[in-house]
Image (cartoon, rainbow, N blue to C red; front, side, top):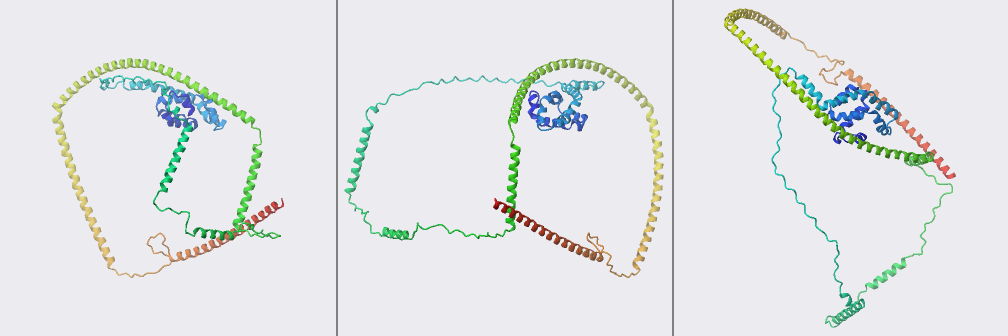
Length: 501
């Protein structure tokens, strides 16, 4: 899709990206499966202007082989690209070109106008409203906006007068003034506090024994300190024959997993060394060559896009000129057809007036003689129909009365039989049958014999399941114990080998 938009940038829209993506998938991956007739339906369902450009690009095998084929090879095999993707395209190129020509004609409107003109021959032309002519409103044109003149910025530096106070003093004089002012302030402060009437503070003379107590406590703590003491712990005495350590299941599995991870890491290191121990000069040379090819191909694509943009502009200008010529030819053709239809309309009006006059004469002739004859004939038919309906009604009434009488007799006979049955006494005896159910229609309904049989079957099945589970548990325990023993033996072997080396 990137190559398509780069090459056809002047005639496709970015908003139709999803449409072109779906049509591209059907073209390059499902064309052979769909068949060209079904594919044609998809293309004709879209706008002709969009599909003509797409067909001209997609079914250009030479262009695809030189541009997009190399991008496809990065993702698919070369045989798949040439046979599955480009094979159907090359096979249906002629049919696609024919369909593209039809779409161009459909887009220009010639085919539609021809079909409309062929379908209107001999039909009555309906009056049409004149088209609405757009009239420009008389709007007041805004006055041109005044552009303010640019402000001129002065490019100069203004320097003030040189200060004159720098010559009146010096650093040595400032230091002397500062020292004199400090000494004067010290004397004034000493004199102020020397002449005060407030009791003089004796800060160096105190009656508190806090300092003495603090000194005694510090001396006592210092005596307890022993900085020269040997702080080393006594060495641990290990047995000469070695300590016996009992490992649990978690320790065995953890140590065995650690050894397996180390073995896998060493195997990966050896494999990486074997795979990467090669000269990379050939790869760098190939990489440089492919990058230069990519840059060259990108430049060619840019140049091709520029040429196509120029050609598309020229083609658009020619299409406009052809459209104007076709419109003139179509207007002359429509005018000739309009004159022919007007002549035919006049002939049809004359024929219709002649037929109307003949029809009026026939109606006048029938109006004088036919009404009385028709009235007498209709009266006779009504009388005959009335007699037939009357006889039919009487026959149906007699038949219905006979049926009602027969039904009444049968009903009385059934009532007598029911009375006789209800008056005869009966003996009701209930007998329990263990092989029959209660007959309520429940889903789990069963007889007593069936219930006992199912209980015995379920009991035997539960015992079999219990024995089977017990066997599985014992086998799993034995298998786990054997696995742990193998892991312990492996750990001992690895420790022994590590101690030897």
